[in-house]
Length: 137
Image 1 (spheres, one colour):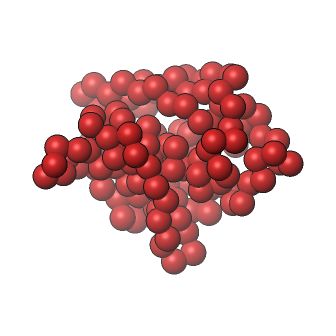
Image 2: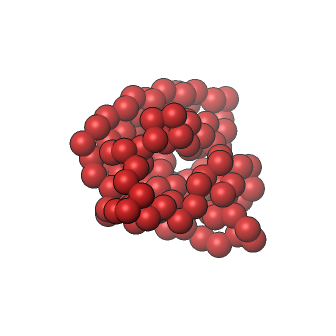
């Protein structure tokens, strides 16, 4: 699984690539954390469970990332590990993370939500899955 952030005007793009759609979604989630802080500094001591469904793969990615943003905001946590199952456009995930520690995590931004800008979920020519969109910060 690979992940990266990319510049987009005043916002930040998040991208995941993996051998399965679920791996690409996990990569996009790691990139979401990276938009806030260094994911390597986020421990995995607490878990949360997330479920969402959507009529197509791209909307599922938006719903997934927005569900993570919601969990981060309401629990005041950051997440660093993602275990995802996707079947018939229904996603079930267990995520691991820890409460925000401003001194250690040094958050650089607050993600408000995933957008439809640059939204893509597709299998590429090399067989790898791509999952990306821009998040509002």
